[in-house]
Length: 83
Image 1 (cartoon, helix red, strand yellow):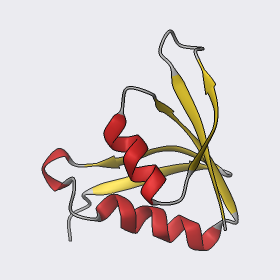
Image 2 (image 1 turned 120 degrees about the vertical axis):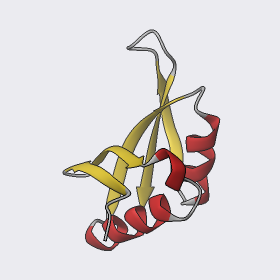
Image 3 (image 1 turned 30 degrees about the horizontal axis):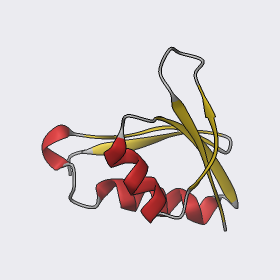
């Protein structure tokens, strides 16, 4: 009955997936992503290039890198997913 995570979605853009620290790597992020995949035909997100764990997660979920940017003094990857 406790909320352990949530996904922030702005139209087709994933603002973030947030999972309580002690609940990570238990499939909660995947469940959240699977839920919104049922609602959307495509989605996009940005992730810091140094966040290897997140990039690996999104790639396993069939997101692909579309572009790189450096708008925030940190390299970011723009990733997208389509049904």
